[in-house]
Amino acid sequence: MPDLATTLPPAGLPPIKGFIETSFLDWRGQIAAVLFLPGCNFACPFCHNFTLVSDPDSLLTLPLEGVLDRLRPFVGWIDGVVISGGEPTLHPGLERLLGEVKQAGFKVKLDSNGYRPEALTRIVERGLADMVAMDLKAPLEPLAYRRACGKAIEVERVAESLEFIKTCGVAHEFRSTICPTWHGPAELERMAEAVEGCQAWTLQAMNPATGWNQEALDGVEMYNAEELARLQAEVADPVCRP
Image (cartoon, rainbow, N blue to C red):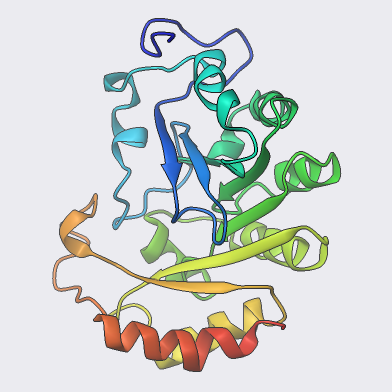
């Protein structure tokens, strides 16, 4: 069995900084492996994978070929590979990575924050992703998004990705990590309007205790399981097409 910690990735491939061999949670209805790529263009205060952004050099770099050697015997049992992060679309070699995973016999799901619509468009049009999951952090308004993603951004770029994903024909899901302080009824209603007509919109409870920026999360509360289930049923599910 290859030692996944000893070889740097070939030139042009993004570094892989984390690997889950089997996940039942990261791709709904599928058994998937998960690869984590470093770096992000957001600084979400509630991020729980922040070491990928704040100190990626502290994490081992895993060679793609070693990862694929681990996974090839399970083609047909493992349904696909999720490429997550961080923000994968920051890496120029992402398309090569996706292509090699598909050539190994696996479907590909791409996780993204949607800030690089040109990269998402190119990946989908080249047939390199079988599913795209995009995070919707807040209503598509500059101040709301700045609070949720930790910096000022061009919200129009997120909106462009959202509209492309809804209409491009690829399987997709939108995900929102929410808390009562930032995502009350009015905010959730505006987010619902933005994603209306999508295939799926999944709400997740923000956990301030595990977040990156504890100062920004001071006083932020959590939705409990019952509240989250009610919001999923009453707010999120009704705007998704059958």
